[in-house]
Amino acid sequence: MKTLILAMIGVTGIAVSAAAYDDSDVKKLLDTKKCEDCDLVKAGLKYTDLTGAHLVDSKLRDADLKEAKLIGANLKGADLRRANLERADFTKADLYGAKMSGADMEKAVFTDADLSRTDLRNSDMEKVVLIRARVHEADLRDTDIKRADLRGVDLTGTDLRGSNLERSNLQDSVLRDVKLNKADLDRIDLSRSDLRDADLREAKMKRANLSETNFDGADLTDASLRLANLRGADLSGAEGLSAEQLEDACGDGDTRLPDGLSVPACKQ
Image 1 (tube, rainbow, N blue to C red):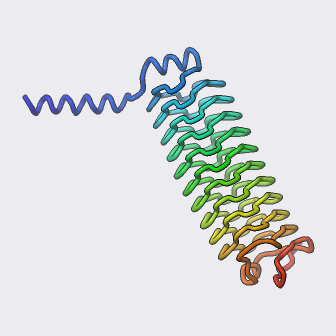
Image 2: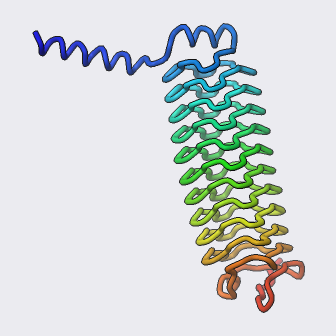
Image 3: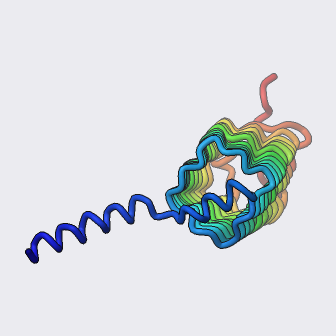
């Protein structure tokens, strides 16, 4: 009998864990689009239209929001850890301080959204759209952001150590005081961007487009610049830059370098 009771408790525990969300909270969200501090853990909200929804501090861990519409939604402080956000639309959404580590955000849209102070560690952001998004002081360590569209993004003070941004587009972006040491920036487009005071130690920037980019105060110690395009870039105030790093890069008459350094001219 004792064994049977324990087995029943075990089965019940599994059932509760599998359906962790509160049915009344799900209904409230769908009926009113207002559900502050709600329990929506593991909720199935795939394809749901939640435009303008109020979800401040709500628990959405492991929830399925694939292709959901959250345009203009308020998700300040929400817990979205390990959630499925693939192809979801967060245009103009407020995600300030949200917990999003381990989430699947492949091809999700965050145009003009606020992701400042979010925890995005170890998340999948391949082909994500972050055009003009505000991402101040966020934690994106060890995040996969390959082939993403981040044109005009503001990443001031964000931690991107060990992240992979290979082939991503960050034209006209602000990356002041960001941590990018040991990040993979191969074939990235950072043209006309602001990298003042950025930490780029040991970053890989093979074939990167760094034209007209400002590196004043940036630390480029042991960074790889092989075949990088430095046309019009300002590296005059960069730190840790060596002649050896510039040997395989290229620039032009508008490229500014620290005294005593030079770079081969780019071929047309």
